[in-house]
Image (cartoon, rainbow, N blue to C red; front, side, top):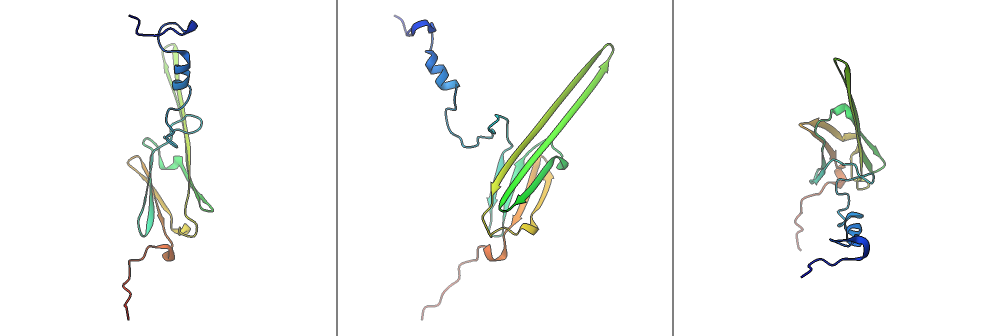
Amino acid sequence: MNLLKRNGNVGMGFPRLFFDDIFGRELFNWENGNFSTSSTTLPSVNIRESADHFEVEVAAPGMDKNDFSVTLEGNTLTISSSKEQNENTHEGSYTRREFSYQSFQRSFELPKNVVDEDQISARYENGLLLLTIPKKEEAKQKPPRSIEIS
């Protein structure tokens, strides 16, 4: 009994169309999926909103605070980084040279007329870039108030 069907010149196994279909494109659309359009890995980002502010956490271990650039243009917050590393080792009659280059850019659109642009702060600790983005006073969520019925 033959369990696999032959399909022309493809030979034993799965038809070529199956492999092209599975491996030639994304199976699922995971939105960003931590991959850029150039198939490079992007750091994971967590965004939390409270009544007073937004918090953004960017997982970027092995970086230094000087490797980052954070800009706000209009209501678009852009976090980018580039890091270049070169290492040369001379031992006896040979030289070993290693180098690497890492970069990424993530942009987020903030709600209009909500963010207090002058009070945004950022710090880098334990592999996380942490941004605190305060809300304007008039945009802060107010607690419910009781309305007296007459």
